[in-house]
Image (cartoon, rainbow, N blue to C red):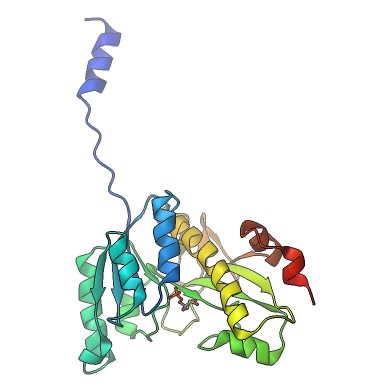
Length: 251
Ligand code: GRF
């Protein structure tokens, strides 16, 4: 047998180990449009090779659970009112999540404050999408507060979750110019479009091992990011979303 034939025999005998896709668990409470963005990204092979293995909601009638089922994803309702307190609920939540052995947990409209026990269990592996340019406008009702304050810049952020509510290091933001035509509902829709753009990107970067939390900062390719993370400008986001920039900028 020649050397070449020998080598090719060796290669023919070689069975590569199947690569297991990184696993993602998504937590929701409601509509689940961000979950849908992740599902769509996965089905277009734009989720860093990852697989959404389960969706958990604290609200049994969350529409996002239907979205999960329709996509063939394990959908789990875990109603919080059936538990005595936050610690008991989060203990149950940890068990459900760990059964699915996730590499990443994504909070996509999960409207509950998490206990330190939960956060510490998954630290560095939990990301949240928040409808403001953090650290501005932590908490609820961000669109109404932005309009009431008359500020010109708004947007959304993907950040790592720490014990400080909406205070963990930001990975990626998308900015938006607030216009005179923006009502609360309009602004919510415009911000949502940006959420759907950046959440799958941040998740894919994490699953590819590029985006990390080093205990103090979010890092990208090993480099610590500034406090606002990486930011997509209004113009760049609008271009990605095929928005009419002139309309959006109209006074
Ligand atoms: C989004 O605006 C997200 O930023 C916030 O909750 C909302 C969830 O929307 N945390 P959806 O359920 O993904 O449509």
